[in-house]
Image 1 (cartoon, rainbow, N blue to C red):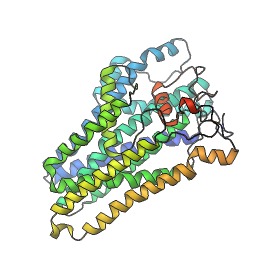
Image 2: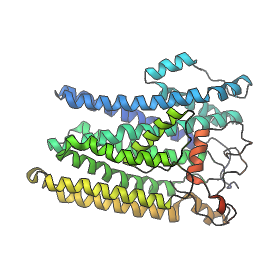
Image 3: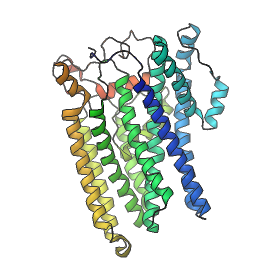
Image 4: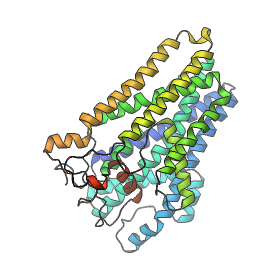
Length: 414
């Protein structure tokens, strides 16, 4: 079914989400440049270069995904364009120009510009095909933004915290970098969640009452993870990449075991699974169909143990003189933050999840099916479909086959 307020439209809220996503991206990029310049200006060439390496590595990963998706979607989009079912844009670069733009690390920005132009036209003119393509583009942007924020902001946060604790002082540019990176990560997760729900007709939009606790629980769960890694690096910096490899490998096999079919070719799929493993190193992401309650218990328990081990090694080998002013407070803060984050997440899914709120508002106990009619459904009648978002939507909101006729079901949670 479709909820009364779940109209088929591209609202001003959708435009705001795209603008805010672009804003956080540019803010994050600007603070990166400021931090790198500040290090070089102060003569810290090593740290300045480390920041730039992180930025360019992250950008390369995002551009690769963007190009893979452009190439994979070319045939479908050309078919729609030739039949006159795709809206004409002011600027439509060819394959060679697109390839050059991706080499110049500008492919992601091209997607933003296209989505904003088309989104504004759809909002003003209410064009049906433009509406489908606008949401198609917005979904890809939200996924790329998630990859970008985790690959760049999370490692940079770790690096900044490590430098601050090593020098035992904080510069003004580092404050801005910490805040911008944290906001970038959590906003990307929130925007991705909203895009998933926007792409389906039978999912109630993420409202403010739901968005706040979702934003909060992600913030509370991410920062203890990053701080624990930074603390461990201050005493065993030579082993931090070994730790990454040791944790990444089982996470990669976890992603492999899920049997994902997200990309168009097998090498691209392997690259995707490796990327997911890096994301899981920092935060939870569901990539396969089915109920994920047990998966989340295993994941958060595993991460809690790993964080405890990292912080424990730091506590045993730290410099008491340098760390005594903040050691106990930091230990209590990180552990309590993780615990509170788990509690907030449970409260969110129990009482504030959009599907739960929809049941209270409209008194429905329909199954959370992916086959309902409507523009944002994933049914066969939808002419232009983002297969990547369909895959994620099936992963996050699927119902096991044996439960499809049960009226009261548990929605798969991200």
